Length: 218
Ligand code: E4P
Image (cartoon, rainbow, N blue to C red):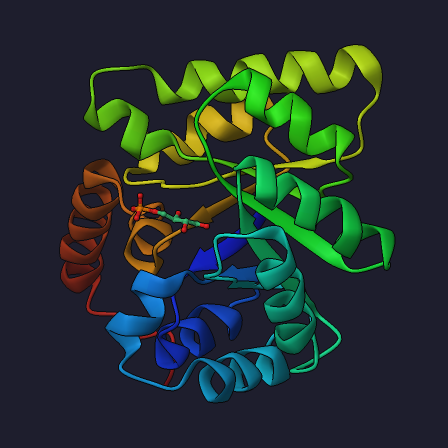
């Protein structure tokens, strides 16, 4: 499973990238707002750092506006993935932009039917939002599973990009189902390394080591 980082915080991206944990980046208008930076400037910095797909989101509501914004965002770098919402206009924009050979990420997907339409419109990525479904007492992971089944039934090449990930369990479950990509906030990726038994085991080993009075480096 590829790891994308869901943030526009360049320090956090750099940190994880130094460990080889970053296959791509996703941003959205809220994350750009949180960064406090200009969308083109921060996106360019991310694209220069990460060779994989970097999603930048359009904000127009009509297809022509999304297409124009998508083409403008694509000028930032070759690895820009244009993000459009899963509306009828978003699907129209996806069809046009993907037809021009651009990567398109169709976002705000909350149903299997929406994902089916995005695949037919030529989306490179479909972003089903797990956490936001869980928030309203629905099963976000069931959606990932349904989309996996449907895409595999027909051989659609659109990649399932599990989004709105909130917990480390979301990462495990998405990987078990076979999501192609998971995009997660940096702290979720870091938490994947934590286990209380690792900490406890390490503490025990160090206590015993101290009793030996030995040193590995002299
Ligand atoms: C990613 O592409 C989405 O914009 C993001 O995962 C949304 O996450 P949230 O539901 O935590 O805002």
